[in-house]
Amino acid sequence: MTFLFFISSPMVDLRNLVLLISIFGVKPTVAYVVPGLVIAVLGGTQIENLQMEDQIAHSIAITTARWI
Image (cartoon, rainbow, N blue to C red; front, top):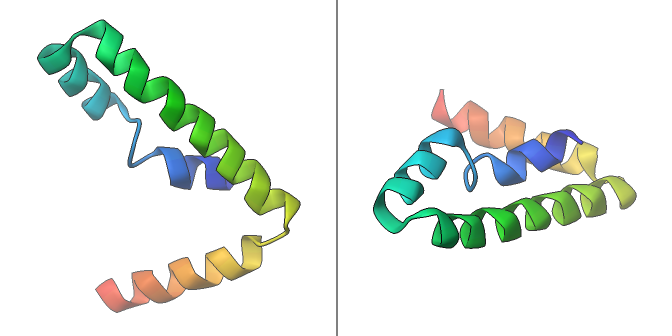
């Protein structure tokens, strides 16, 4: 599930987790993280079920090439 990482990494990473807990507390952070992980799992599963890995990998390569 490589694409699960691509979907969830901008939303749910350690830095955001620490920042959200320090500002809002545990309950709002959990309310943010759990749906983010569910969306990432569902999105990654859908991408793999539709066999779109090559299309998405191609668009990532094009976007990355523009930044270099």
